[in-house]
Length: 292
Image 1 (tube, rainbow, N blue to C red):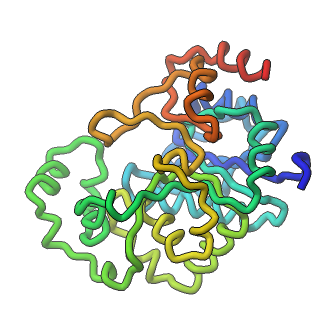
Image 2: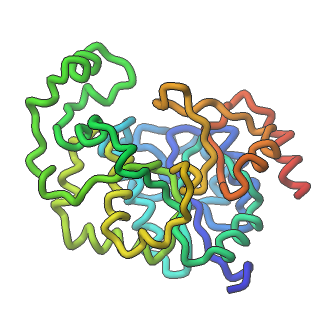
């Protein structure tokens, strides 16, 4: 396949307009199609400055952090890709991510590695007991506030263990990884086909906690596409993403757009980086990448 023949769609989950999102669209709009899922709670008019360069999904989910709605939003984007026959790859990012490579570099990379999947998955040894608990038990809505005394009590006292998920034991062995990935049309089609045939799988995640980090990796592990994953000890780099984590591993550190050349040296195989601070110098970022 020639680089110019690579059809890659960038799919963005967004709840607000950001400088990072504007830069991403400006940088990539001539090299790939861009589709955005805008949170149902958000005013879509804030995206007017980019609307002529992107497509917005008709279906909009009310997305909450760590909630099943995160999975639903991702499925909206995967189904959009499946409905368009021309695409070879889809990359899912947020409005806090920006490209580590130019559009042409991304398409060249995917052309050279066509047939590979870029989705992170940690080893079984790296799965803690709480990773299993995220799906083994049901979590009420108050657990999905980033702050809240009820959430702290519910998790801290492990009250959730009284609310077992009856569907948990019918699931395949769980696997975990980053929810930001780049996958092929073939794997996308396989995912949607599997969910159509096994609705109980998706239902098992309806009351999970941060199930978006388990949903797609568990499917990957039972699919024929596991052998196509680009291996790396870092599950984020496996997914083509450069992310630096806080010491407690619960949140990503802020990265700065103007350091893009430094990050490129540290993660040559990554396509995007996150989480990008809105205090970044985006003019410098655009100047640096446009020179490449």
